[in-house]
Image (tube, rainbow, N blue to C red; front, side, top):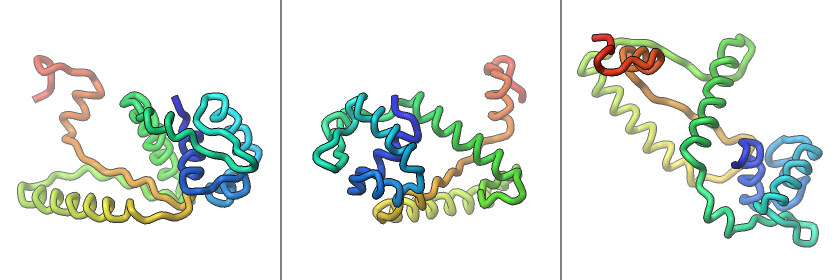
Length: 161
């Protein structure tokens, strides 16, 4: 299973950053950290060195898709760090959370805004740039009741009404 750091470096390599220096400039990671990570990725068969360039093992990458458990763990880490950093007043993090009541009309407007956001994000995925400057955007909604039921693992017979 890949770590978030390993996936970050593989994404940089996939953008034709084929040397430690190029990966460093793309990711802002320290070169020593990149070297150590590349060694681990090489041992696991994710990449190989050809001459002076780092190349991806495209066969392995094509066959591997992140598991739901891996995605959940990574998302959990991102949200946890986002919340922690958003509490820090000096943080540049922009995670925001609101608990609101939505009328039916509000819900329609909200769903329309979400649709527009998703459409906008799909269009921007085609753009390429520095891996370090990519944004993680997180959104969603749930009812307060469902969150409480999930937190306290209440089943339908014991759920709050």
